Image (cartoon, rainbow, N blue to C red; front, side, top):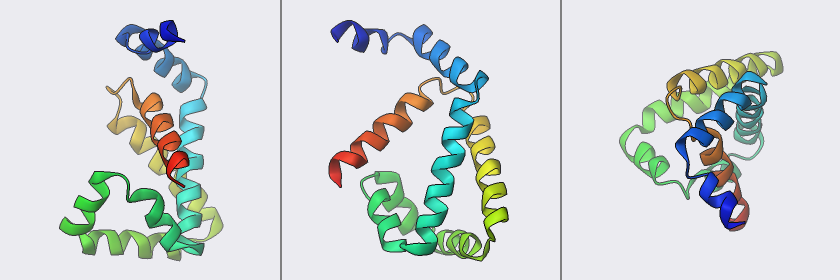
Length: 121
């Protein structure tokens, strides 16, 4: 187990894992699914949506600094049809990949965040 943890600290290994996950479309599909889950949660249980995000400090900062922007985003998601939600999730996944193109720990960080949330629920 210790060797595995050490391997995940090696930037070359992380870069290789991340590249492979993008090449095989695992990371883009994972991101799209994550966005779709968030969109559905916004529509059916907004309080649940916020409970899953509150452990992350950047969320509290955004809620304080940009409440109007967040409200516009929520309204947009609520107004989408099922097909439009699917398209929006794909666009958001692509944007996330582009924005984080130099972040070769993206997938590891996403999984760590998901595991952290699982532990808090």
